[in-house]
Image 1: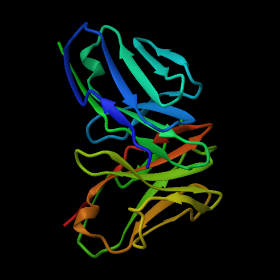
Image 2: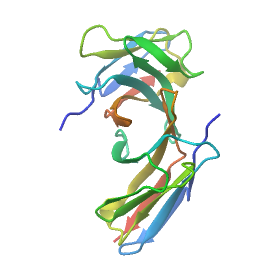
Image 3: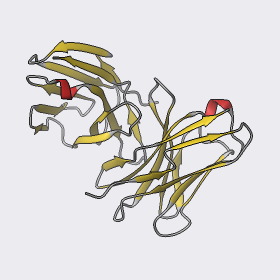
Length: 111
Length: 111
């Protein structure tokens, strides 16, 4: 069974601070996606990474896929209250037709 | 920007009743999915669908669940005899090129 563990589970920081969220597995994934989810809404795709070691930037967000494609990280620079939400990673594997979601990191950025 | 749309946004049903949740995937996408999220818990995979047949399903997707693509645009999830534990947010998703996009969800409440 493929599992994706995210850490930390909860994170409360002050506006302007930096943070990193981790997504780890013992399984290899062919792709990994990061989503942000607001309460009562569907996950919104932020980025997809497919190559080991790949780094993608989306404004203040930096995403990295581990060299072995078993883990990923999301780094936010100078967090803002608008970054508050539930961050989810989801892995896809070759030969399967599903994405496995991580346990989620609930981020709160205080003004 | 194209998006996955789901109807209804909320559905309240009595235990034992049948419900049909509807989704319109993004038009050029080939893979379709249903996921559910029980309040406060992980996003769980239910089923994937490609080329008019189920590609993969989870243990949750038992005989009371079925999916159908009745025409060229709609993708439905039917729950034949709802149980209290079926209460959850149900998300439809579609994907192409390894990127999956989710709808806003249907909140199903079984009473």
